[in-house]
Image 1 (cartoon, rainbow, N blue to C red):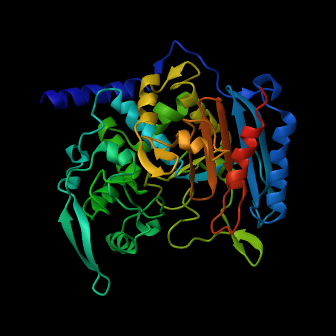
Image 2 (tube, rainbow, N blue to C red):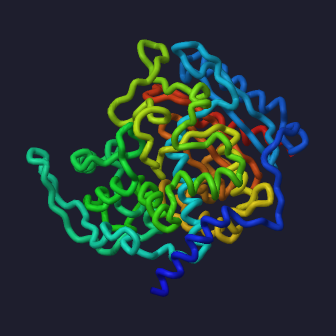
Image 3 (tube, rainbow, N blue to C red):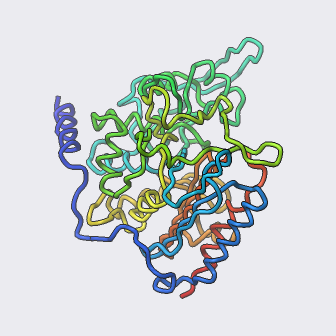
Length: 427
């Protein structure tokens, strides 16, 4: 009863206070000259050349790029078209499907609730979602019959495992293991978006019954862990995930164009997803995995914490700037600086030079030597429709490049942009 009373009390606190005021008062991002923040205007112009070349070579149909330093926007431009079919020119404030960029926002929501004392990072998720009790690890799979055997996992899945993609969960249709893909398909798991009437609770409860790749905590494998945590946020807060995001993250940060589903008056700003065909870019019509019409058609009932959001370059830049500010923006504190330090320090191994923290991949000392990726502690990620972002706490730099393509054969802007941003530092 004591725990129940505490949960009720904290749920009321969530509904009454979206965030707390801060002694800090950093302004939302606004424009300044490159020189004023130690960047070279002439060197930033190399991004123009990169973008124009990529479009001329049909690497991408269009892109929006944004660079900020010390909380000031020094570069924000659009190139090419938003819709290759109609020829509509891309605008700086156009809205993109950001897919897995959603994950960092869900992780932020989780850590906001962690700061309220609702759970420990190493608590088992089954404490709140009982379907995850006694997880099983995939052992053998019969491709002819579609049957499989499992062994009992050595430990339960914890919230930390879900945040760091070390839970053993898979990723359905995009999973590298064909066995997991088939098992998830048979179970009817929705990875991110759908026009069908699907609730996050139903999707996650089905997922909880499926076998894992490996024993929780053994290693990193990209997964639906943040979708599970989206449901976890709903359970702890007592409100739908979209409402939590709006009241506690988007509204405080001034993210006025970030949604799971677009309002009617903003549909004309949505960038078309594209795919290459016969040397040209054409509207992407889907492949059974990604639904090209999800933001504005269908039931609009699933709130995917792993990949369901839409946003703009400026909105997402303000979200990243909040992290560079130590958890505060515009006098509103979402996270403590100490919490962010924990999020960046708690990592699992991904690749040489890169670990995954509690919300982002994070560059370590070895990663700095690769070149062009930033200082130690630089964090980044991206989305399935070819979007990328990074933020460097040491240099106080944010970089975002948004495109909307699937199946692209070449796109050097994925790495060139980040390299060109850092070479423009001039102080």
